[in-house]
Image (cartoon, rainbow, N blue to C red):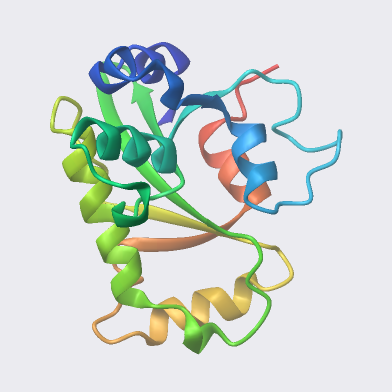
Length: 173
């Protein structure tokens, strides 16, 4: 399955909250990824849904203060293969360098659940969630996910920025 710009930007939540759509390169930069012009995402116009901005909009809609906002995944997009579409959730953990035991496995589940509630069911959700780590710590991150009990690696996949790009976005010029 590959990212589909059209399906992503035409999702019902995007029509409701147009400000939630953002170029993926900008989301990565804001989250601390040290992307250079050589980044695979640079200058590609790959539009995704910013999960944090989506939750901000729901706070305003529900008349809640931003301090009461729920946790959400960083990136949401729709991928397509033939006639099949799936929505994918991605969390960015690019600043994780060590001490993986401090990562909260329940936080990952909460973020996925809250994002699912916010996005609705108009597009089926993938059974795999992706967590993007720096290539410097990817092996340790994979071991962390594998060791969690109950195991997170059954549905949470640790992946590098380059692997993430190759899996979903390598069809962009």
